Structures are given as C-alpha cells and as structure tokens.
Amino acid sequence: MRKLSLVVVAAMLLSTGNVLANDVAGENPTKKLSVQISEMLSENNFSEEHNDLTAQVRFTLNTDGEIVVLSVHTEFDKMESFVKAKLNYQKVNLANVEEGKVYTIPVRVKA
Image (cartoon, rainbow, N blue to C red):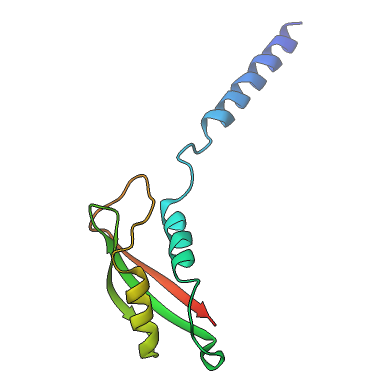
C-alpha cells in the first residue's frame, strides 16, 4: 500500500511539472505581423510576366503601431514602389509594439 501511494505522488508531481512547463506567452508577434503584411500585399496588379517577384523589406514600427519602411531590396523597381506604397504608415494590430526594433522579412508577390 505504501508503494502505491508513492507512485501516485510521483505521478502527480510529474504531471504538475509538465503543466507548469508549458509556454503561456501565446502566439509569436513576429508571425502575427507577417500575416498582416501578407494581407496588405495580397491585392496587386502585376502582369503575368512578373508573376513571382521577391524582395527583402526592412521596416520598423513607430509609437502608433504603424509600419515605417526603411528599405526594399529587389531587382524590379515597380515592386519597390508597390511595397512602399502599400506598407508605409499602415497600422498593424499588435499587443506589445516595440518601437524602433528593425524587422527584415522576405516578401513574395504573385500576380
């Protein structure tokens, strides 16, 4: 009977440890930001000959939670102006905005 109670106590301690070890921070804010940017760039009017354009976009967020595009690295000039026009000063929905943090994301636009 004594061994059974020790096994039960050990099982309870292990299960409690597993519950407390779970991450309760929630969703990654960078991933949430990436999804919002994807939605902003989804509507485009590029022709079929430019159907798979890529760029590296560097941006930061200001105190109002707006995107401030710092640079767009791409080989297609219209892609650069398109990304800047669509993203610059667009408000994003994030709980904890880190003002001044520089983000770099790859962007692919399909026609």
